[in-house]
Image (cartoon, rainbow over all chains, first blue to last red; front, side):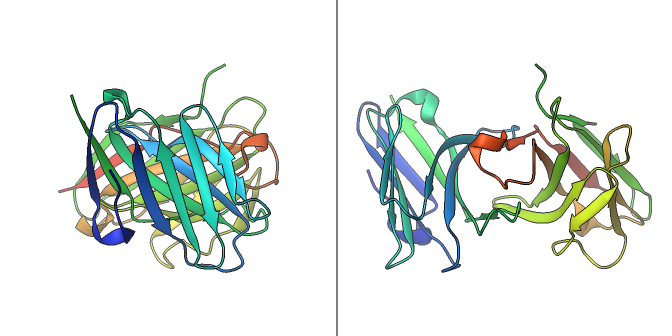
Length: 112
Length: 118
């Protein structure tokens, strides 16, 4: 399953399928990007990050893709599991200023 | 190794009262960041503090809001004369140094304080 842009804030996928969550960031000067997972009643939890000198980075079951030309970031989750159900946020940072700018967020619902 | 501790977890205040939110950073962290999250929205940066110094307060409302991070004790976010629009979740993050929110510097969020103004 895939959401296109920020106009579809909820993504519903079948357990075992791959998920793709998209994010358009705002600041051309941003050089560091993070994906966070936020479960109900909890704070954001770091998933994966990427610097602007890279276009792809892989973790365990997750991959982040960065397209600086169109200021687009995506998070791919392989073999989505019920435990992946949460809200996912992209965040951008510029030159280690300490301040993160968060996107709107996408709710991922995993159907058993 | 305890994470970032925020208290209280839930806070209810009547309009006009003061709200004080506390954040104890992770051990060894001397940089604290406060964010506000309205329902169904992303987190919005408020303020970045180092021990006894405010580094960046560009996201703080000009009135009623203040933050401090004293040499001893937790960081405090203070909201005076609360209004219903202040109802939100307030998150604190901490890091080891001024290297920004990179994973290398241990930038970690607490579980937040949910403020409800009635």
